[in-house]
Image 1 (cartoon, rainbow, N blue to C red):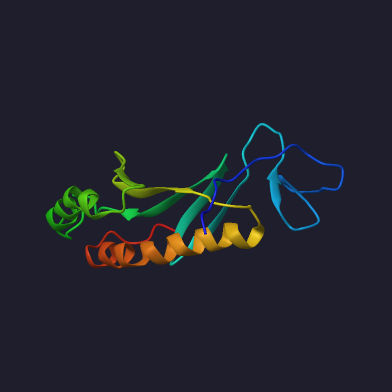
Image 2: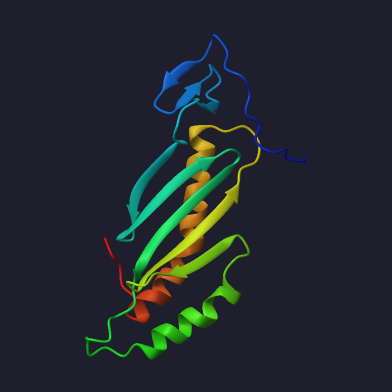
Length: 148
């Protein structure tokens, strides 16, 4: 059974406004017109996660942690070496970045398929969080701990 890309339809009279969405009687979600795309944030495994729906793509940003400062006694080279080598091991739709403050984040883009519902949106988020789990374990081992 082939899936088709998420389709954003025109508003109908039978839809109810709920936050940044309109919801039809079947439970399908339709982003409402507005300045900002639908988004929410949550904490998972003591990390701040931001989820944003941009058209048919779910964007997740996980604030993974911080590489220890050179002012601390903890060794930094293993963390920097792992961060240097990690991108080749990440799924293709993921990007890792490190800021000047040594904060590390992973950005994930997930194309959504089929009809968008609250259940399908939460399923997509949950799948990505479960896929992220082993990488968070690695960061914890390297001393790039949670920032929340």
